Length: 380
Image (cartoon, rainbow, N blue to C red):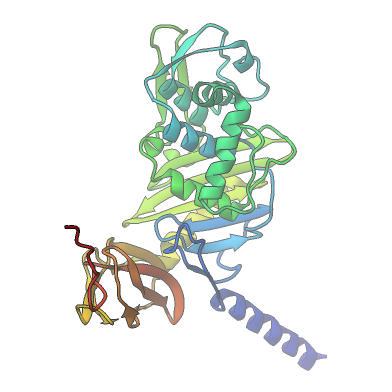
């Protein structure tokens, strides 16, 4: 019996080691070729959430996951995408007169009154700080003319980002058929949001007073408890409905490393986010893997020039284990003329402890014509 128990313990230990250090290479969507990532398995943190993910915001590497690809409702974390669409399609200082359609919306609210006049920017603060469901409807109308057209823009953005397991039915996250995401994809939506001008400034604001002419004064407070109690915290969004449970997205930065934590249906979300972020910042470090302007010479067959200079057009960093190492391999095979300037002619492959964690495009610094040139038609 003792031998049998020891054997079972050994099998369990080997299984844990496999999941923590095993890893599977996952290729990126064509829209984000650099976001190839490796996930080391469900380890490192125990959470109460039905679904959870911890993402390297800049490198796109999934550092921790728990049922991260399970489709679930996401309550008011929906408003992250709402803010993205508004910021990319509306004018911040444009004024919107509140219509009846944007009043008396259930759930968290700014208590908008018909006829009040707000700027788009003011409504965005109401959306992200007070989680106003009525603000979401008002912004949808102000941006796209009606809620249905705005939701189409939200889903179109999902397609652009290569998200296959996210779909929106409204701009505020109230329970509706066909309204869902995954922790993994919600983290990637947030990573994109952090690149949109003004988004971070809004979601990291603790307090603001909306007191411009046209509406009654409103004092807003950010509902993110970790904003003032967790080092490096700068957002992002809370959410709750009976169907979705407690949902939370947070983002924090330390030592140049930005991490995004997501939990869906989590009764202990604040504590879980601390644990997830603490794990990320302690277990990983930020490593610059290439610098904008790096070059490599590539052979050209059948061209007026025998080679062309390939270059890296951006500086890239990835999260790797604190005791891990990074190696780089230029994957640049011979190419055939003609070559256009800026054409992708290879890639720089990044390996962390032997596993592929990223690929950076190598582009042609100049054009190379085909040998023999092009014939010109002369007119007399």
